[in-house]
Length: 207
Length: 184
Image (cartoon, rainbow over all chains, first blue to last red; front, side, top):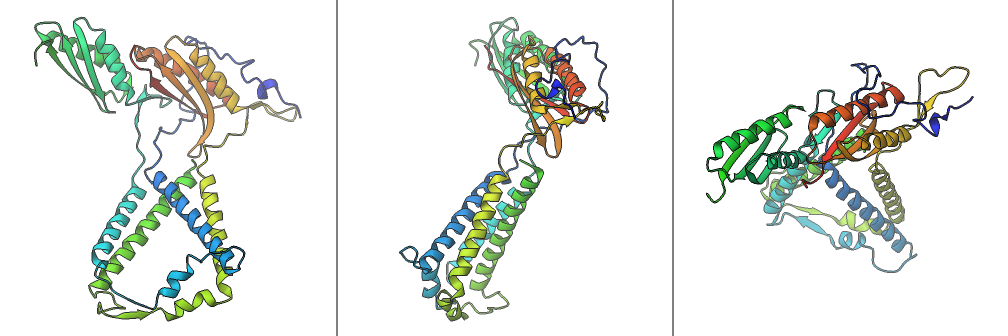
């Protein structure tokens, strides 16, 4: 069995250039589409905490076994509370503590079932290219800054909406607001779905 | 993180939540005298039997075995959270008795990242091959300038995705995640 140079140099014979006019045939629906980018589920950090608790509990039990066998000195942590127990009876704190415990449990159950977040928006319709929604604000800011008459830009963005506040030197902010809106609409048109654009312009010096 | 690890995380958190709800309701129900086994708050339960356990011969053995099981479970659980494992090389079309044709996906990912970074609309890029929720995926992460035009970025990334498909085969998905640098 022979192996081609592919294993050491995967691009030696491949046209790995960035030339968008490459003559390679267009790939179609037969290619695998990637999964949509997703954040880790909300349950992941809680699970991390549980791992540590399980690890600590296991270590404590092993320690107690070693204490019971007189391998190490000290008092067993599990034995003492068990031996001090004699009779258990309902206590007055059990209602508030029980309710708090049940609410905490309910919160954990909700966290366990929360769907993953998808903080990225697709660029184009191929499903191959994604842009962080937080970065839309940066693109919007860079774009709006280039519009004539704009001196200051503040931008916020979510996956569905880009909000921009601009300050202009023009006495009438209306045309600037329209120009910024037009430019941002064109800039974000390749996104799928394209976000809604909300622009507010005010004249420098006006509050 | 694999789908199995995610499912295990969710199940474990759900189970702990259920146990907390059940014990919380039981504690409150006991004080209110609503438990079937304790209809009066004043009802007492003797734990005399329990207090004898630590004196039994089986006690330390049980502690040790349970402790080891818990530690092993925790370690296995931790291992499931290690970063996505590297993918084995894929076998390409054209493989027959005369020889195998294989592509190392990590090398393909790095080469694609290098090629992508060569485009004017891309500042830098890095690539890796991973198993994303059961799908073999070459993922490129590209940093674009805030001043970049999205059509140019789309054109460059789509071209790279096409080339990676040609190289690694149609079964390997390509995902390119773009991050924007701060505006200059």
